[in-house]
Image (spheres, rainbow, N blue to C red):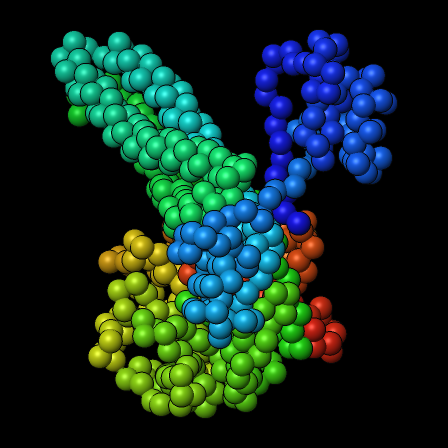
Length: 563
């Protein structure tokens, strides 16, 4: 039986419903719906048939107890002479006996009690409300952080300007004009920075207002006692209550510092920008945990149909599975050693298969494996990434030739760019493993050879510049940085798993550490692979402990806020 919460809002004194006296009313009979005094509770009320079985509560508790809804008197919208008796899940509608006999005969397995349907809809609404609240919390967190950025920039502004003015006071009058130009330049920097931040703050505030409005709509619908109205509006509510936090910039420009020069007209001082990566507050929450029979989840590819492709190169197989409740149901299993996978725009798989220099395409409908135009011969591809611009980035290696290279390949198979040596003709990479890219065109890859320290290499688009992240002195104080897999987040940052520390390092698009998270804090051990789902969640695939022979690697579906 479904329930709603009755809420006692009125403070107006009422008479006893049985004796009509103005005595102090202390009780309510939930079954009768009567408010009664002490005397009638022990007297007149007990004369009512079966009153001894009634639920009598203190009026102080009104609103805390659930009251039954009446599902027996809902008129059918198509047959006004009849009342609805069941709910059809297939048609998502209430039905009367005539509806069942004329339209829903073949829907027997989809017909359920109205009360059960009500409970299902209430649960769905509450889940939607929970999602709205979670998105609102994300917006609040983001807004707080942006306000901190704004305050920090104002504080920095208040520090930089006096430095400029103090230095200007020591200069001759002839250079006063240049000092004013510097001041104006800082003002323009601040104006541009605050405009950028204020734009995001405005969008977040609008989103929060929208969240509050949608939350109120859902709250009203949950508390309504008009069941007919409930079912007429609940479907529309599902369609209209989608609330998403607008994307904001992952980082902002910062006011340049002032560096004083000698007191000469040619060297008054200059403004110089400094790298100021945004520090993030990160939160992980496990949504679901799945047990596999694999020794390692080398890679995960989520699909738009909610299924996932799982690669276990150590077990020599790739698996297509569907999450069903708490279980992953295997749909297909291909026995082959695959080093890397990527999804195409047509939702087929690109595979780097053992022994082949040319990428293979797996048709996920037919299971047929065919050659592609993406070839890195004489090297062997070991990692693949598809960009938003429909290009393919391939990591190729050859131990025999002692070559390791990264290829940017267009859809025709042409090698547009090859990264292999620096300007001194020295190898760029030790052993590149996993690769991703960000919207600014930078390529980020994991470079790690067993027995050596690892790093994340950033190849800057349109430049010879190469940045690298070698781990954090505090995080990797006792255990060296051993990066394994890398993925780009929805905010254009990158996340990297660290084999020995169980830390996920979070970097900006230039390879600077902006946050980190210890997955042991939520019970995730030995994280190895990462994947972003089409709906914004993250899959974390695990490996087994060093020295173990168990085949019980786990996969976690988590939500991550803040990055």
